[in-house]
Length: 269
Image 1 (spheres, rainbow, N blue to C red):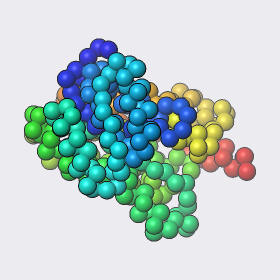
Image 2 (tube, helix red, strand yellow; image 1 turned 180 degrees about the horizontal axis):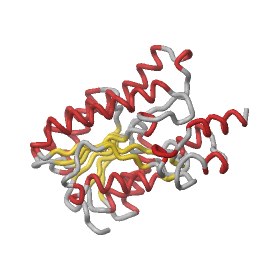
Image 3 (cartoon, rainbow, N blue to C red; image 1 turned 60 degrees about the vertical axis):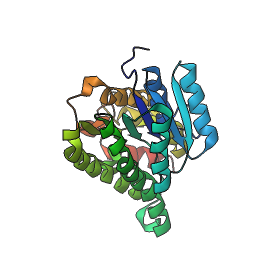
Image 4 (cartoon, one colour; image 1 turned 180 degrees about the vertical axis):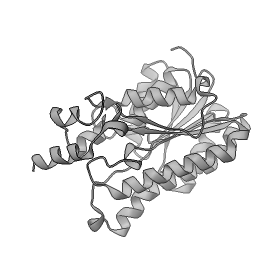
């Protein structure tokens, strides 16, 4: 532990991992805890949250569990209250909770669309609504929204409701950065690219030949790559950075021909 976040209190929403392996929320929680932050681990499945807390503790970090659903505004309000009560305040909010059904628009029901928006967008919106006053009360802090390169680029697969929700997060990021910068509240977004996580594995494996064409590095990233970007944005090293959308994608947004991903997927059919 180098103590880059020593004495800080953080909320990580969507901190559980739904399958074997390390998810982005779990990796973020572990890295923030390892660097000295007390982390409120938020997930709607208690077992997932408890597993992440154990991982934090294995790295000699401190944390607590909050079981809640960020699509419910009351749960967003309660999780902020829980962080303040457990840790004496709040310095960091990471909005990572998301669902990503791969359903074309012609087959997307209103119910499915609204369920995606309620978690991915409304959850971030309401978490910020209740967290920002707590950040201001501490003299400022950091909000990091976990968006996606799918918000700004075709990624070679179809999940329009997810893309809409992640693009809207970028608008939220910019607006809040402008509104609360003078309160020393920094608001940024991280845009993961092709990341090897349990969620990605559930969608489908990407063959090596296709992967090599997806970005400049020719490989997938992992959850720790995202976690370290979040750590930087939450640390004092990023004290002069706000309103930024940071792709963590191996250069995909400047080099990725989406047709390569589509061609690779169709070749398997």
